[in-house]
Amino acid sequence: MKLGAVTGIAIVTAAALAGCGGTPSISQDALQNSVSSSLEKSVGTKPEKIECPGKLIAKVNEATRCVLSHKGKKYGVAVRIKSVKGTNAKFDIKVDDKPMSS
Image (cartoon, rainbow, N blue to C red; front, side, top):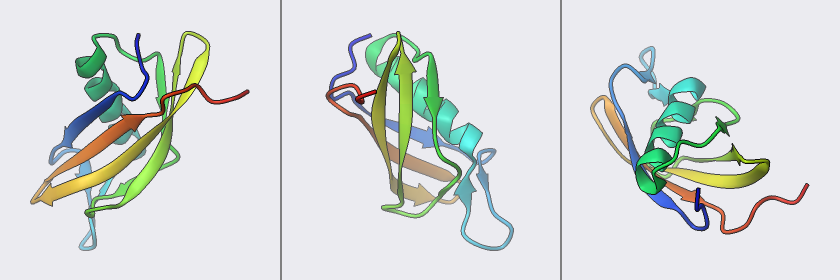
């Protein structure tokens, strides 16, 4: 899996956006699954594991850092909400150029 500076766009749809009268958010599981799927489409191999710290508010420019684990190495992954339309959210994904130091 070639990861250096991989970028992608993921789309989360209605089932993943949850909100009770307030600002909708993307659950931790939905976020991790969407990032993993997007990276698989970009590089042709599914990451072994994606870990995000929690849910992400579905609001433009909201961002988080996730960790991608693959073949014994960990990479930081920047995730930023690009747009929100109704029950769909699009976000940008960028994998760090170099693995994290242990």
